[in-house]
Every structure is written in C-alpha cells, then in structure tokens.
Image 1 (cartoon, rainbow, N blue to C red):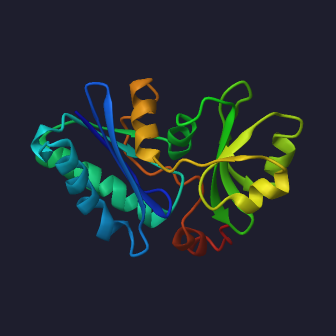
Image 2: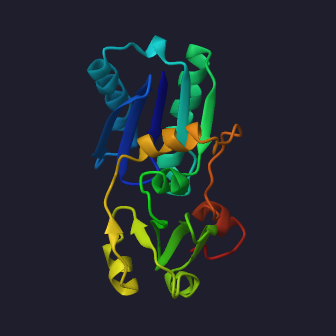
Amino acid sequence: MILAFDTATKFCSVALYIGGEYWEKSDPAPNGHAARLMPMIDEILQEAGRAIQQVDEIVVSLGPGSFTGLRIGISTALGLASALDIPVYGVSSLQARSYLNEKTVCPLIDARRDRVYAACYGDFHFEEANLPFEEFLEVIHNQSVVFTGEGIEEFADRAGVRVVENTQYAKGAIQAYLAGVYRTDITPRYLRMTQAEAEAKGIDSP
C-alpha cells in the first residue's frame, strides 16, 4: 500500500494506492497544511478500511511550490516513514501534475511577482524552471500545449491556452513514482532562494 501527499500549493492532496485501486482526497487548506494534512490522511485510511501501520511506502511531492507547505509535507513524510520503518520517495510537484493528463501538458505554479514554476511534458519537453511568465511564453511559442494547476487562469488567458483542471496531485505523485520518476534524496526543490536567504545575501528574491 502506497500513501502519497502533496502540499506544494494551497490544496492539500492525499492518495492511497492499493492493488491497482486509488483513494483520493484533495481540499483547500485555508488554515495551513499543518492543520489539515494528518486529518486527511486519517480520513482516507478510514475510507479504504486500512490502518496507518499497513502503509508500505510513502511518496511525497518535493516542490517547487510553497516553502512552508513543502516543509510540512516533507517533515510529515519523513516522520511517518521513521515511525513505521518504511521507505519514502520524492517526486517533483510539476511532474506529479503532468501525470494526471494524457496530452502535452505544462504544469504551472504561481511563483508570484509575475513568475512561474513551469515545465512541459509530452511531445514538447521543457525542464523545470522558475522564470518570468513572459519568458515562458517565448518558450512555448508555436507549441500545442495545455496548462494544468490551480489559480493560473490569468496566465492561461494571456497565453491563449486551455487549463486542464485536476487537483488530485497526490494521485499524480503515485503515478510518477510507479513510472520510476522519483528521488530518494528527500529535500525540498525550491528552484529559488528563500526570502531569508536572499536578504542574507543582499539579493531581491523573486
């Protein structure tokens, strides 16, 4: 049994994979992921009729995304893996989103200040990056793509691109893991410095 969760954005997403069957739950976390993640894990285990002690592996999204959200997700994954003595694997939050779609897809996460965390998977490939949205528009110029992610409608309108809605990101994380697209180095993938690091270096972090 695989337990996965994604806390990279404002949605808290949890999924279970048991013998080819998925249980999925994705909810906004207005009060923060710390208040919602463990209750959602308990809820989805109850729905599947399983106990936390029956989990064999944990998959967690490593980012990019919210610094605080990623830290909560990763620390929870490592804590549970240690307590249960089971392995934990990490996947890119962008790749997790791409596995929810069959077309050439560009997962986007708003990085603020008119920047995006972005990548493209499928017939057209673009490596994960944190870049100004206008620069990303140049990257996808003349490419047939769709966007996926929440809160990116403004970007999609500016690009003239359709948004594919699906917030079951933890299911995508499991699909990425099953496809062999994972890491064993469980550290956050920020793709930029934190504000504290930037200030310490005298740099204006985007």
